[in-house]
Length: 150
Image (cartoon, rainbow, N blue to C red):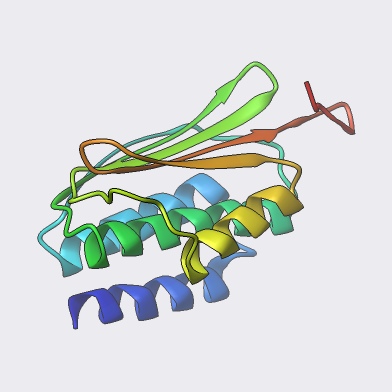
C-alpha cells in the first residue's frame, strides 16, 4: 500500500506542478515523499539547470519514478542512490539500488517504456544487474539551440 500511495502522490505532484517546479525540484520532492511513505533510504546528487524542454524533463522524471518503483517492488531494495548530473554536453542519470537484482534482464512494460522515453529525447539507456539493479541513461543537452549527439 505504501508504494501505491507514493505512486499516487508522485503522479499528482508532477501533474499539478510540472509547470511550476524545475526537473531537479520535482525529483527531489518525489524522493522526499517516497522516503516519508516507505522505509527506503534514498541518497541523491541532483544538479540543476539542464536547459531541457518540458517533454524532455517529463521523460527523465518518469524514468526516475519507474526506477524507484521497480527498486522497491521488484528489487525489494532498502537503499537507492540517484545521480542526475551534467558531464560535458550530456545529462547523465543513474539510479542504483541494493535489491535482489536478476540473473537475466527481461524487457518488461516498465523497462520498455523507460527505453522509449529516453530514446524519444535522443538518449541511450542501459540496465545492469550487479549487486542490485542499475538504470543508467545518457541524454545529449542542447548548446545554443543545437542538440549534441557526440
